[in-house]
Length: 284
Image (tube, helix red, strand yellow):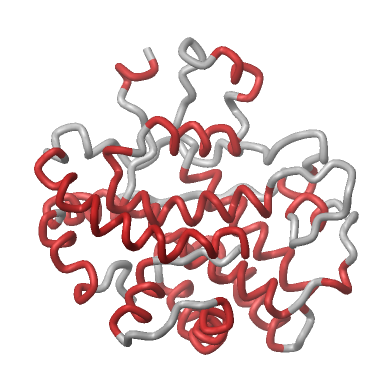
C-alpha cells in the first residue's frame, strides 16, 4: 500500500523524488522498539509519558535539500488540499494522502459519511498493511486483537489497544526531538512531555516540511484533541486519558469512534517521510 499515490500529487512527488528515496533508505535501516510498561500507569495530572524506547531516530535529511526551489510551486496546491481536509480534524477524522487521493481521483464528495464508509470498507486492507509494514511490526498482536474485538462489536475493548499503539507510535517518533528551552523557557517543565514536543515541532519547522507536514498536521490535530486532558467535564468525544483511567462512560464508545482510531493509526504512516531529530545547532 503506497503512502502517496502518483495521480493526485505527481508534480510534488517528482520534485521530491530525491528526498523520498533517501528517506526510505533511512527508514529501512531503523528498527523501532516498544515499551508499554508506563502506558496504563500514567496519571490524569500528567501529559502523555514520553518513553525512551530506542537509542536513535531517523537522522535529519532536510538540511541539504533545496526546499526553496519547490516551495512556491507547492504552496498553492497544498493550500487547496488544506481547505479540503482541515475541517475534518475537529471530527477526529485523520485524512491521509491515500484517502484524499481516492476521493480526488474519483471526483467524490469528501464528507463525514463518505469518509466513514471508506474507512470501514478499507479496514481489512488496513489490517493487512499493518501486519506487513515495519512501522507497525511491534504492534501486530494488539492490532489483531483490537480488530477481533471490533468485528465482535466490542468497541470499548477495541479502543484500549488502539490507544496503546498510538501512544507508542507518537512517542517513538519524537524520542530524538528536543525543545529549545532557551528560546522557550516557559516550556522548561514540559520539555520531556510528548504533547509539547509535537506542538513545538509543528510551530518551528512548518515551512521546510511543506509537503508532508500538511498530512502530519492532520495527525497532530486529531492527536491533540483525543489525548489532551479534560479536567472537569466528561468529554464530548473519545478521550485517551478519560478512557485509559476509568473515567469515561464506556457504553458511549461506538463503532465510529473505533474507525477514527484505526484511521489515525493508518495516517501516522506519514512519519516515515519526516525526520524529527533537530539539527544540533538548533538546540545548542
